[in-house]
Amino acid sequence: MAGSSIMTAALNEWSARDIAAAVNRGELTCEAVTRACLDRIALRENDVQAWAYYDRDAAIAAAQEFDRRGAAGPLAGVPFGVKDIIDSAEMPTEWGTPIHRGRRPERDAACVALSRKAGGLLLGKTVTTEFANLHPGPTRNPHDLTRTPGGSSSGSAAAVADFMVPVAIGTQTTGSTTRPASFCGIIGYRPTYGDLRLHGVMEASGSVDTLGILARTVDDVALYRDVLLGVSPVAVETLARPPRIGFCRTHSWDGLEASTRDLLEDAAENLARCGAAVRDVEMPPECASLNGAHRTITGFEFARTFTWEIEHHWTEISETLRGGRLADGLSCSPETYYEAKALAEHCRAASDAMMADYDVLLTAAAFGEAPVGWNAFAGVPVFQMWTMLHVPSITLPLFKGPAGMPVGAQLVARRRHDRGLFAVARWVHQRLAS
Image (cartoon, rainbow, N blue to C red; front, side):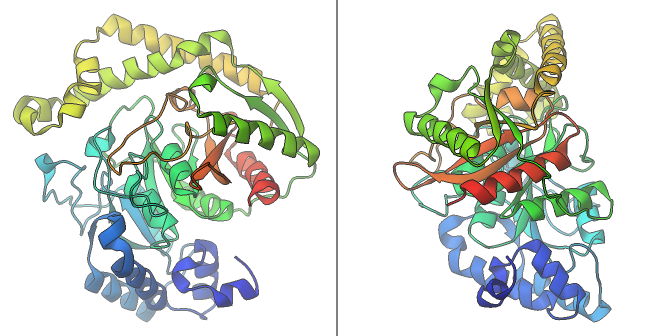
């Protein structure tokens, strides 16, 4: 948002970058922004149910203290939310399960501490599915309350999409940032594996877990990534030439809704007409087994991460989880696990070589529109491949499906080419967003 459009939008609709710039110039207070976000929550939370915890009075008091100190920084005065598997010192972190109801960490997770250091104000904890897995929480899709927002970062996506906060942190082990960003019509970013610190974040599967950033602009995603890296923010570069884009249908193409396949085909053609060098690309054949490898690896690790809960609170774990990822993991042998990890390593090397000819790959972000049923957790496995390859990806809100619901497209880059991914993402978004 820039120029006169800033002046006409409600403060809760401003981007994080614009809020921070105005606060740093002394033209806006953190309290004013915080109250605008809280007023939006008061208006919509009963319907959307994005928040596991927030305290209006405490948030206003924290904003007033921020203004009294005259604090500054790249996130100065920006309210943000974090998924309720991420620790914060003054709020509960309950992991979406009654087993840990009332759990109070003693310190902030690294990502929360870095956000506060940059001037951000933690507004509250957003709803997660149980243990950031399949069993849903109460959150609804803000575009249609009869539909799911996707998971597992359901509350973070819904809160950003409904203008309750400009940015929020989620996580991704399978498609937990990619899918809800697509369903809710916002931007979702999954970084190169290992770039952002996970200290103080509940582990699900350490081999693939990452943070995820949910926002409404590419510039906000790039800004927040730099904050979480602990470096001075660098503006998204402007491309010197149209990008080289590989159109990758993946081995899951037939599982997408026909309308989604058509939207992606049209997008590839439109990008070519805009000057991009677009070519069809196929993943190495061995990557067809990556979705199965993902299930093996994450199940094996998940079942061991939560040994205490399994031993002491088995009946309080949902049947969804007991009969799914836990059952997979408990029945998996170490030999099968090691074979899956070896396949993943082989495919990372093969895909790195294949992707060297492209700036990004264009592919699906979700199977289609968010399905009806707020507690639905639907989707064919179009996500696991990219998560398992450790590559950075960004979901862009480019399309509308047959029911008028958002459908995103996903851009994928080579490992450690996150900044280049942002530059292409902004180029694509400027040309295709309706």
